[in-house]
Image (cartoon, rainbow, N blue to C red; front, side, top):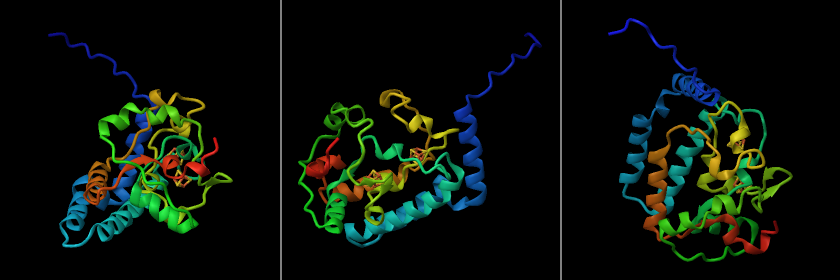
Length: 210
Ligand code: SF4
Ligand code: SF4
């Protein structure tokens, strides 16, 4: 066996940033570690309560998680909104909540097979197209923004991978903290109430001008 050791390739910058951000996050907020977060989510899911109450509690968890992630991410202080200029997949109940807030009725979107949604290639279709609720680069429905917006973050070295004017949507590689269990729970709660999933612009077609 050779005693020579091979020089290790340096990790890409984005990966290095993600490792740093994640370590800092877990040190400052140990409760966010996936097994602990999972316990908290499971407590909500096992409660004997309705879907509206569960969704509200899951929103609360994601908001707390996002507040913890934000200072340990590429989102920190840059004030960018690239993530509002791509496909924004939301549920009917979330669209209805926005509709109530702005005094409009959200369109009813038909239930679709998740496999068919993938085939619609929304990421490409809406790349560079601003969400109709993005006003002066700020969210105009912030307090009722959907789950997908609450959990948006990037652990990359910079926001570049979020910017579809720089990186093609299908090539973009945004690194996220592991919130899989929260996403499953949210999807389960919305699925249980029969909510259709669609791009935000489908629910508000008359507001979508780009
Ligand atoms: S997710 Fe990306 S686009 Fe959105 S705020 Fe963070 S860095 Fe900016
Ligand atoms: S609802 Fe608000 S946060 Fe979400 S994509 Fe639209 S403008 Fe951005």
